[in-house]
Image 1: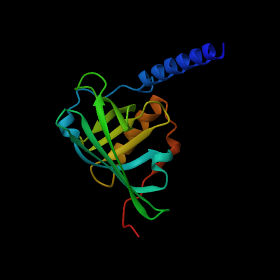
Image 2: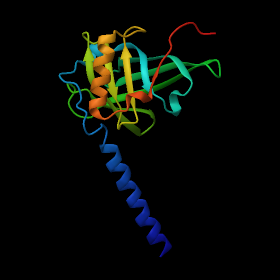
Image 3: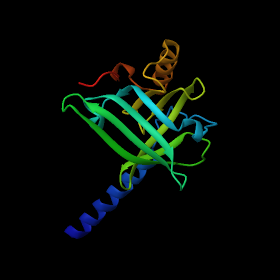
Image 4: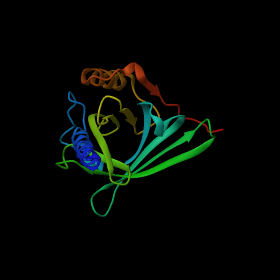
Length: 179
């Protein structure tokens, strides 16, 4: 009887994980298209983000993307932990969830576990990007430089608010000299 209950709980958990994994973008968000992966490659500076444990206490954060031989995307996230006074780096893989001309990807830094990575706005011919995570707990504003024009900032904040993000939660990342 106990084994039957455990087995049932196991399958309920698997079903829950499957449903959650499929929900890889907030309901009101639309991935950018037509998306050109090659133009997105290279180094991006994180201008703002919702804080979460993997980026806690990080400034000078960057994300660098490159296309792997198999067509997947290599992701290198890097930042300076100003509390520990050391650089941190995470290497992962991103894959398109469907069509390669739609900016709806999934990214993993931990083996088989993927999460949504959705470019929902681009400005300046791939100079600025607004990235939505799998839900409204994850949001990033990226730039090819360490700054962002006010007009782009205003537009991205409006888009994020329309999707359902509470933009007052954004942490504005510092870029500069490391002690």
